[in-house]
Image (cartoon, rainbow, N blue to C red; front, side, top):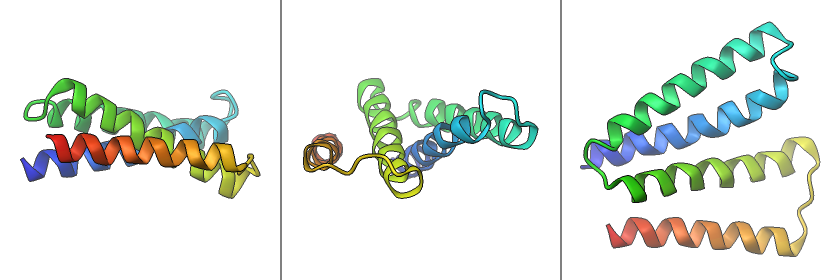
Length: 106
């Protein structure tokens, strides 16, 4: 079970990588960022599928999406100058609270 959660964590982090990679690839017009994005996508999906062999599908998918969304928002703020308004940060905090709640309820 712990291995499945670890795979899910890595899958979520790879989702962040490929989301940022989509921006870096400039619509898949830049070869190296495009290749790295596709590799991160494949690895992320593979690890998500492997984790779903053990974890409930709803929990696993929600955690994967949540990690991806949370990480992408935070990196967007840090590296792309996206808004860090209080409402946005509170919303990100609510997503994090939901992830923690799902993990505790499993």
